[in-house]
Image 1 (tube, rainbow, N blue to C red):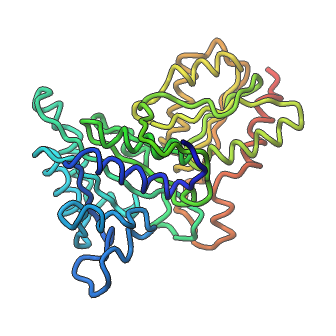
Image 2 (image 1 turned 60 degrees about the vertical axis):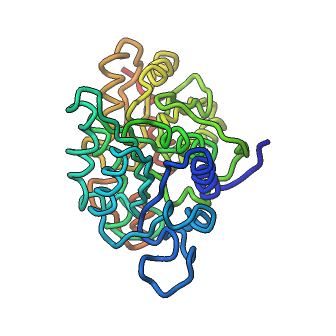
Length: 339
């Protein structure tokens, strides 16, 4: 039975259900219960966003473990546990902190299966937050998923809805490869949609056609899916119908769905909150130019933030984030292009 819940609730429910299903699933991270060594009550926090609230009382301290403030220790422990028969879900509060433990991810977890001829498994999930919109400044607001999509051996998941967040997280925990699960912090409460109570999995590498249209394809990621939806609504009033494609996973990337849409519409705008150099917008634009050039009736356009750290000031941060207005303008220029 489906009911309308937030992305925050959907992720929490997914964790409950995978831990009920599989006793080898463990959680570890900073403050995911009460805070390691703190004098406060158990289950006082549930992480800085309350996502893991209620899990330690149900599953105990042996399976829901607060850790010291050491990203290297968290990921090193999780990767080691994954190679030893457990299925750890490690929480790193912000993707910005991944630099501290990048070696464990890039040179260890991502490469084990390949280096050992397919005989090693590393079923670890790393949950982390991305995105601007909370005035959390330059060190807590980045969208660094392109960095990890660049590395073979890692699966990268970027949900935009509560439904997808639950189904993709269940799929991630069941997967035998390392998965990084990027959660846009603004979407925890900003999006609410129908989510079944029962367990279900959303397969990796299958994009979602959020909106159908014939005039221009918009490929958007995470929160930008909703910004693209706002733009598409405004453009529909002008007689321009946009098709919105949400990749849901960027590694693997559903190239077929993107190319099929571009071949139908003949136009492409890609929206990505990550920095513009070497981001997913650039990668998808190159894909279309390489594989669907003959179908394009206008140059591909990308909408991304400026190549600058995320500002702290609310006015500057709002200007930094790609807006529905900027997306709509990019579509107008694409649809109005005359060779």
